[in-house]
Image 1 (cartoon, rainbow, N blue to C red):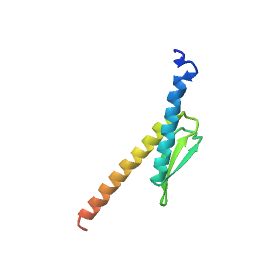
Image 2: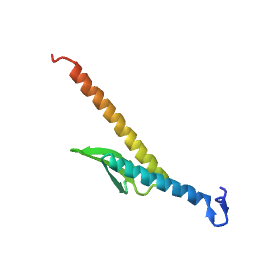
Image 3: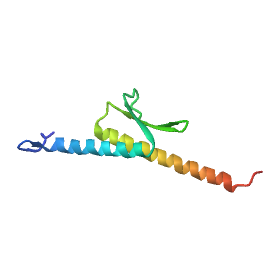
Image 4: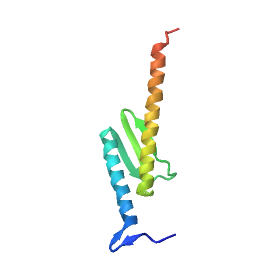
Length: 101
């Protein structure tokens, strides 16, 4: 593997990593503003995801992963939740549209 490209004191691999960290921070703020609690913990099986306990929605990320991997986990969890909401809404609409037997 090649060494990181650098010009003087600027290390471009570090710069790219900083961008990922900033994107992760921004995404975490957005997700929290959307009502999720985010827990970043060591997950034994590495299985990040979301759950709902009562009215509280939580996302779990694995602290042992890189920022890039945590960002991907976060995006996957949010996409999975959005799909769940879509299916739940469709099921609820289907129940309303059907007359009681």
